[in-house]
Every structure is written in C-alpha cells, then in structure tokens.
Length: 409
Ligand SMILES: [Zn+2]
Image (cartoon, rainbow, N blue to C red; front, side, top):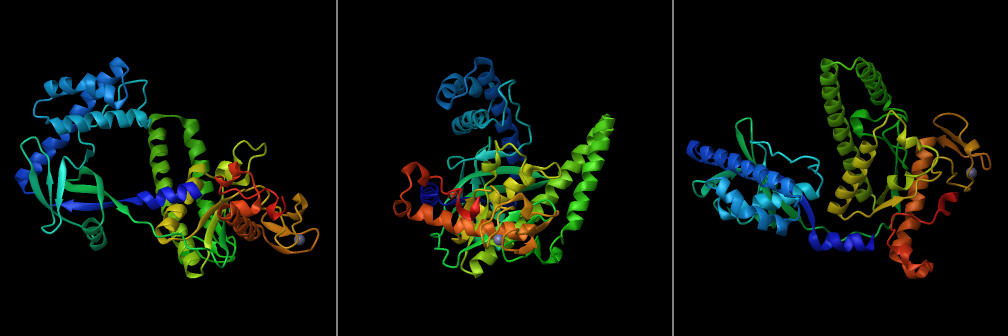
C-alpha cells in the first residue's frame, strides 16, 4: 500500500470527461477525414508490425514511419508518429493478438495527444489536427466536466463520432486528496451471491431502491438464475440465432451489474466517509489457488463483477481520501467475530451463522462483513507501522493482507 499510495499521490487519478464538439459542416467533414486517415494509417502500421514481427515502439518507428507516410497521403508527421505509438500500445496491451495483424476499425475512436490538439480554455474551443489543417472547434459539456477541463491537467483525448455527434473524451488528472486515518475503524463489505453486498452495519446493498431486510436482493439473484438457465438452453442450441441472443443477454447483464456495482461502491464510500471509517473488501486474488472453490466463485456469479466492485470502490475511495484495504478472505464466513472460534459447524444452514462456542447468531453475510472490518483494522496497522509489528520487510508491501491469524483463522 505504501508504494501504491505514494504513486497515486504523485500522478493523481486519471479520469475521463466527455466534451461535445460543435463543428461546422465543413469542420465535421475534416474531422471525419482525420478519423478515417488515422485509422487507415494505424492499420497500415499494424500490418507492417505484424509482417516483420516488430512491436516495440522505437523499432516500429524505424520500420514504418516513411512507409506509412508514403502509403497514406495527407498523413502529417505527428499523426504518423501517433499511429505508430498507438499500434505499439495495442500489441503491448494485448488488446491486439499477435496471432494476426490487428485491424483498426475505419470509424473507431482516434487518440489525439498534445501535439495533435490544443485547448483554448477561455474561448472553450479545441484546435484539432485534420488532413486539411487545424480545425478550431467549440465544445460544450456538463458543468462538472467543463470545470475539470478548465482547471486540471489534460492528457490524451479520444475523438469519436457517435450517431452523428462528435465527442472528445478527454483524460484529466484528478489530484488525489491525502488518505485520512480511519479513526473509527473500517466499513467491512461482504460480496456474495444471495446478497450482492452486505456491510458490517447490516445494510444490504445496492442502494435504497433495493434496500430491505437481509436477503433483500433476492430478485437480483432470481433474475441472474433465470438468465443462467436461459444461457444454458441457448448454448445447447448452438445456432447462429441463439448465439446472437446470447451476446445480447451478456451485454444486458454486464450493464446491469456495472450499474449495480456503481451504486454499491458509491454508497459504501460515502457511508465510510460520513462515519470516519475506511472501506474494506475481501481480496479476490487471495482466493486463487485455494483447493475448495470459494463461495464468491460459484457458477451464478461472474468473477469479473466482484473484481469490478473492488476497482470501483478503490477508485472512489482514493478520490475522496478514504482508506481502502483488501483483506485475506480465508474463513471470513466461518469465524466468530466475538470469540474468534472458527468452525464449519458455525454455519448450520445456508445464510445462517451460529457460533458453536459463544452462541453468537446472525446472518452469515453480516458476520462475514464484521470479520472483514476487524481484519482491515489489523491490516491497516500492519501497513502503517511496519516496524512496530516486527514483520519482515517483504511483508510490508503486501498491504492488503493482514496476518492470517487475525479474525481467528
Ligand atoms: Zn463465538
């Protein structure tokens, strides 16, 4: 954590804001030409890279610069440099497989860097490279986004035309506030199947719209199980039409989960901020390699949805200076937060927790969330006072994992 946190402090948090461009018809034509040309250039470079098995940016520049300028008429020096960097980036990030040459869609978003675009913040215009010269285009946007572009350092921007509307998606660097000491402990959050998220306060998430007694997200589960059965049926069918329906379902489910994850992480971070606490979740990485499948990884769930929840929460916490810790997930659902007794027998029935030693009873997800909160306090202490704990130095960087003995496992 120490390492990662200072890195965040130095660079800030990149975030994307969307501006709407209002070009004249003539400018719109020039922008469209720019998009086509840049994507064409990227594909030319990509083919060269693949043919010659050259993927590193410096070598690729040497190989492709003159070639792409010769092949793509009207491509300026800067746009050629940008196309080469873009191709190298695509292969490096494995967005493009090296098994075949990556093709850039003709109308796909085109990245503009500082040499291809410049802002005039007072006039609210942006000057963009096009093959027929610079176009100075006015922009509008949501008040918050405009304010961000006015005040913050801007990075790269993506130019894209979506259903006839020209958009500029600009990366701005948000300064991150210093992380506040979690004086009142941690808000532990248990992610699960029956309940997407339950906090150590006993709140079932997502949000007030779905809030209710524990197991209140039952309809979300029902919906997912129905989808799962539907998927199985379609997979068995295996026809082209079935595959199409499958893709549509996957997209819909993805959007639903993403939306729910946004709601949950927003609530959790706001609640932690309000009560002077940090936020703690289970470390999904820690589950990997365990013999028995963890309850988070059962079929009804998508691992990605849990990973996404972690990403969203971590990001929102960093943005507001709320401490964030990932804890070891071992036995969080079998350990008693009162007496520390760990036993499978503490779980007499699905969703129930009854401690066989001290008799503490409650909902299993709520108990797990309490254990997560407790482990986070220990974990935080380990990160922040590495010397006091006498742990070997290698341990310090593994911020998110408190010693396995805490919480009674
Ligand atoms: Zn107990």
